[in-house]
Amino acid sequence: MNNTISYLEILGVKSINKVLIFLPGLGAYKENYIDFSKSFSNNYKSIYILDLPEQGSKGEWTIGNMVDNLKEFINRIDQSYISEIHLAGHSAGALAIVSFLCNMNTKVEEKLMQSRLKSIDISSDIMAMGFGQIPKEAKKVTKLFLYSPCDSFANVFPKFFIKRFIKLSESKAMRIMNILINKPSYLLKLLTFKRKFNFQINLHNKPQYFGLVLNNHKTFFKYIYNYRCIFEIKEILNLKLEKQISDILNAKRIVLQFGRLDWLLISKNRCKKQMLSNFKICENIVIIEHKKLGHFLHKPFSLDLNLNNQMLINKNVIKMSLSHIV
Image (tube, rainbow, N blue to C red):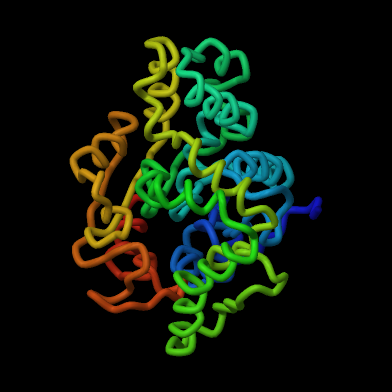
């Protein structure tokens, strides 16, 4: 297993004492976000883009491991001359940076998943694990930029689909995911001009979700099935813990952007009003909806699954992001 954290660095302006750390979405490569990140290089000393666990950085992919890697990475790069750290994340990366701020680490998320199975109150237990206490690594974090987070994995991976997938053999799971996800992505890759996107299929002859090769697809889907996102756990927290989380988040500047055509909105059990309610994780959060944009859409109604051509490089998304950096 890889014991390192893989990342790339985009150099900015030497005289600026702020840095930005970007976390990719599930199945995306760090290289997918180079063009987007370069749009902000005049505002930071350095911009760091981390690889996902199992795609270059250590650990099996979970939100908790993304959180733990982020903590370790901040400890590695933080210097006395850095006065501010900004965090940005797309999709699962957005979930991870909010989870990091609230100290929703691997142990906490495991306890939360157990509570879903047993229907018990675990507020005191997860508080004892540090949830609701801002980690020391987040002391310099002042702003969060969230791009198309999902408020619940159930709206990305339907429960009935996951139940069936868990029962499949590895070879069947691989074939189905190739047909539904990977081969269409590869074919559309051939139509793009973004050469940084290096998508390939089944280098290890394993089930694959975009760029994420699953060493154990059953473990992956069981995790997805039981996971509770930071946006959907408010209702199970006691008042004390809910206030602690609210205080932590309200102390930071948080901007959330999503597209009206985002595929996260496509679900029979989906309600946009409920999604927006879940996104309102604290009073001070700024929520911006972009017309004619979605998770994988660069131009209106164009089917480009090259992850470098998402809503992130849309000029309005970049403009709104820049307006909140200062």
